[in-house]
Image: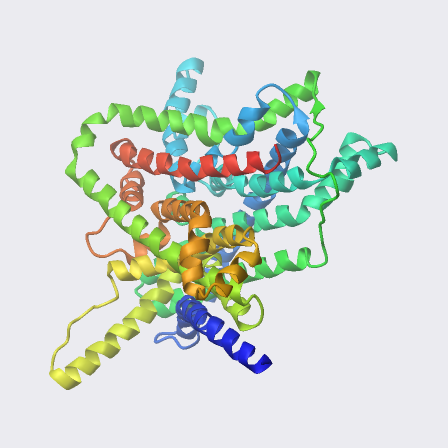
Amino acid sequence: MGSVVSISKLRTWLPWAFTSWIIALAVLFPIAMVVLQALFPADNIWGHLVETTLPRYLESSLILMVGVGVPSAILGVATAWIVTRCEFIGRRYFQWALLLPFAFPSYLLAYLYTDILQYSGPMQGYLRELFEWKYKSDYWFPEIRSIGGAMVMFTLTLYPYVYLLARSSFLEQSDSASNLSRLLGCSAWGSFFRVSLPAARPAVAVGTSLVLMETLNDFGTVDFFAVETMTTGIFDIWLNRNNMGGAAQIATLLMGMVLLLIGLEQISRRNQRQYQEEGSRKKIERVKLHGWLKVGAMSVVIFPVLFGFLIPFTVLSGYAWSALENYWDPQLYLYAMNTMLVATVAAFLTMVVGLLVSYSKRLQSKGGVKLAHKFAGIGYAMPGAVLAVGVVILFGGVDRFINEMLDKWFDYSPGLIFSGTLFALIFTYVVRFLAVATGGIDASLSKIKPSMDYAARSLGESSFSTMRKIHIPMIRGGLLTAALIVFVDVMKELPATLLLRPFNFETLATHVYYFASDEMLRETSIAALMIVLAGLGPVILLSRSIASSRE
């Protein structure tokens, strides 16, 4: 009888396990291609890179990581603590407004602030008029197009990663531990540093890791500010020097840096376990602030909202209003339709593939299926430029093989079949953002009791029909949320789109990049505003989900 049950269970989850491993291998293949190309390049220039440009790439990347990671962690934790544990005027508004900078891609913020703060911009023009300065040598003004400027742009747009996770952790913490520490003689600050912050450290570590990975992934900001990072090195060596092997070697090194970050983050919280105490869901007793403490707290939460969203959004809206005639530009509608096409298809496919991977894990949460689930989500850790290199190598090899076979058998060469097509671009999007979808879907599936599965199976339903009839309707909200977040991420993705888009195929992101790079941000302000407005959707969903977690 036991063997019959085992065979039945094997037949149930084996197809799902096979599917999950097919998906995992599809994610791993481009990454493996990058490593193989780096180890066996056609033209090995590694020694030349080590002697010339690689040290600069590494130095700039490491400086950026420190200069963005530290202030993002401090700002994210400080704002999360203030809106969670303190009471002041406007707290309810700031708790969701602090997520608004999420809507701005870093490269777009860089274009806007350069337009505002450069020598010919309104800020310096006003100062020259006010103080009657005539020449640039008459005064000092910080250079926005620098590595310091890049740090500020990244911090303003990426700190919400830390804020989001830190606030969720602070909301889940019970007041008992902090109250007990106060009884034992700790001050408010001492209680924060000794009790609350250590308890939130795993969440802060994850958020900071995400900030660092997004910093390494960026191309638009560092390229516009002329900061030589690992990502700009991939573009330079691949496109300008036409050396795929060198680009793969830098991509492999960049990939190693990202994996090291992930490893360090996991090691830092390996032995940490956090448990909710009984009564931890009670209403939080917030500290009412007065005097200078109130002014200081409000200044901390106002700063990122003002400079990370309100000022750039106001300026961008003004540019768009002054360029109303461009609403009738057929090229802009074409770029918008292109963006909608790739973002919609990629979001749908990512949602479907993510559902298959997550449901496989639900049926068999141990062993090989669990490992396949982890491998399927590794694409999000890879910068877009790294994945682009791997996809070009992979599909280029497939195209050459097909052409050789068809030429040999039928004396016919069809040319490029996968490389340089929308298929390659959408495939990269799915690989890159699959972890975003599986994370949301896993969370939704975990809320459904296993007894629902057992009841459906006892009534003769297969695992697939159970998923279709029961689970999908119950997690429809989670599926749509995952698809929406992927949709917006695809709209903002720049490095992979620049490298893999078909010839004469432009999206809103590439359109904004090319115009802004030529100091023509006003002419493309409407396209930029479309990207920002689309990014507000996930911000609203995130703020609502956090607010409802304990309020």
